[in-house]
Image 1 (cartoon, one colour):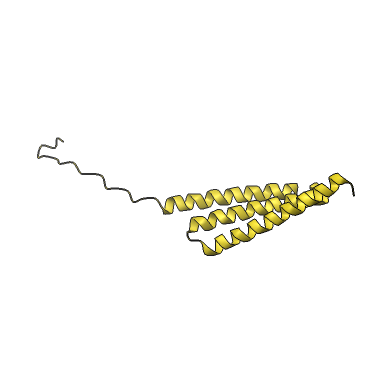
Image 2: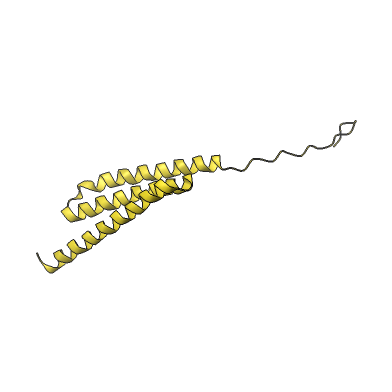
Length: 110
């Protein structure tokens, strides 16, 4: 193996180690919470880590087979994040204030 190939392998191995550690930390965040929004963000980051892991595998094997799979996973992760954000935005919306009633005198003028 040549020197550039060795450097490639070392960097890809380091990238995979970082991805695995980040994935473990994100699974901990999903498990511990404390809020639903924290869990949703952690799941979104896990999806991004899976995509990055597929990219590292594709680079290791020098095979572009996983690129369409990564694209589909990115689309699904984005739509899932938007859906969760909309759900949380509706759920956490502050209650609306009642409109003040105007006093109407006997002639009907305001």
